[in-house]
Length: 150
Image 1 (cartoon, rainbow, N blue to C red):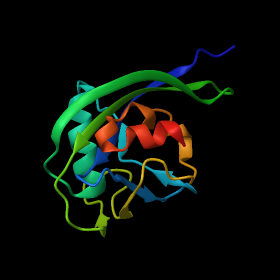
Image 2 (cartoon, one colour):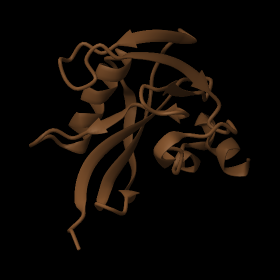
Image 3 (tube, rainbow, N blue to C red):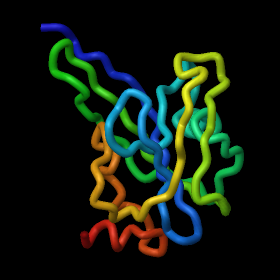
């Protein structure tokens, strides 16, 4: 049996004053996603968080950033691949209800367009890759209570 590959990821639950959560759809997946990505060599999860949020959303300022939890999530059994997911919560002051951001980092997603918008954390819509596993950890004033009760 092949030893599993462990890929470290930083995942961002970004909310604004209304308690809404920043999401996007695609590319390459059907369903809601949050800003996230793989840590680069020598990069801490927190450093990756800020880099990935900037790359995928264009947002350069995150407020009250805190680590929520870390888990190991199985992407596939054969060949084995596991994600070590570091989930963070951050708030932003963002008046736009939606925008398109084009990735310009020169990496794998270069040129990809992300259609960003806000949803209630308690949305009944499906998130890809089980990215909604920890919405219940959001503070109650950020919609966490609603997410836990739905």
